[in-house]
Structures are given as C-alpha cells and as structure tokens.
Amino acid sequence: MNMNRRQFFKVCSAGLTGSSIAVMGFSPTAALAEVRTFKLARATETRNICPYCSVSCGVLIYSTGDKSKNSQGEIIHIEGDPDNPVNRGTLCPKGAGLRDMIHSQNRLKWPEVREAGSTEWKKISWNEAIDRIAKHMKADRDANFVAKNDAGVTVNRWTTTGFLASSAACNEAGYLTVKTIRALGMTSIDTQARI
Image 1: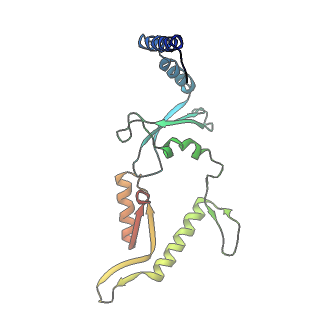
Image 2 (image 1 turned 180 degrees about the vertical axis):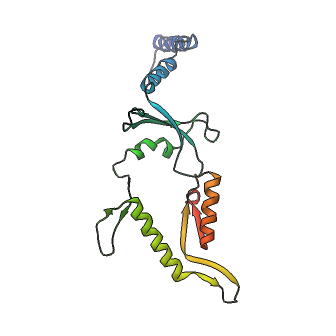
Image 3 (image 1 turned 180 degrees about the horizontal axis):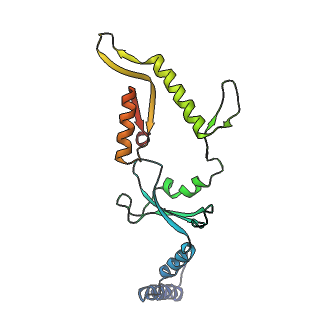
C-alpha cells in the first residue's frame, strides 16, 4: 500500500482521536454491556454445570417463561459463570456451544429401543427403560458372576458388564455410584473424563 505524507498524518490523527475518546470514557464497551443487560433483563438466570467433561465448569443459563404460571420456558442464552472457581466465566468451545446442543433437532429427550431384528427405533417410557435395563443386568449377572476363582479364593466378580459413570457429578453422587457398582461385583467402571 502506497501512502503519501498527508494520508499518513490523516491515519495517525484518526487513531489518536479514537484512542483519546476511549480514554475519556466514551468507550463502546459500556454501550454493548447495556444492550446485553437489556436483552437478558426479563430472563430468569439459573446456575448450572456444563455436562461435557469432568472439569465441571459453571454456566449461567438465561431462560424466558413465567415460573408462577408454570409456562414452558425457552433457553435464550448461556455463558460462563464468573463466580465459579473452576472456570471463572470462561468456557471451552464445547461449553460455548451448549445452547446449540440443547436446541438441536437430533437431541434425544426420551429413551428409545430397537428390538432384535428390527431396523426402527421406538420410543419407550423411562419406567420401561429402567425395567429393561434391570432385567438385562440381572440376567447377565446371574449367568456370569464369579464367586470364587480357580484357587478357591472368594472374589465376587462380575466381569462381563461395565459402567460409565458421570465425572461431572459431586463427590457424594460419585461415592454412591462406585459403592453400588462395586457391591454388584462389577470390575469395569470408568468416567467420561478419560474419553
């Protein structure tokens, strides 16, 4: 880019003027903050934890809808929680896309099952899903539970089933999950922190 002396002075004076105006307090940051406040002024703010990994970043979820009238709300904005000691208001790319995941057309909101020999998935109730899982677990445990090893030592192992626990859960929930799984004899347990 070729610039003569007069153009150079014009560019420098424009930059000096713009930076001087920002220093005097006429920064567009305040105006942008007011726009954000206006957009979220009537929204309900809810604190939550990002579900993606074991870091457990805090998020602020803003939704519309009236709780007193028990109306269905809609999530309109998600951002990092500045008061959360883990992430201090920042989010990774997956956490920043959390609103898109919530509003995705492909997101499953209910249990589905594909029967043997079928190519179609069908919706089932949560109670039916829990009952089916319990029946499959009991049948597998009854068929494959090892009470004693070859040396005759009591081991109480169930090695044919594994469990994927939540690494974003609190300590108490994690403790109860591990105690339950170990009481059943499962030896394979993992969390999404390693995936």
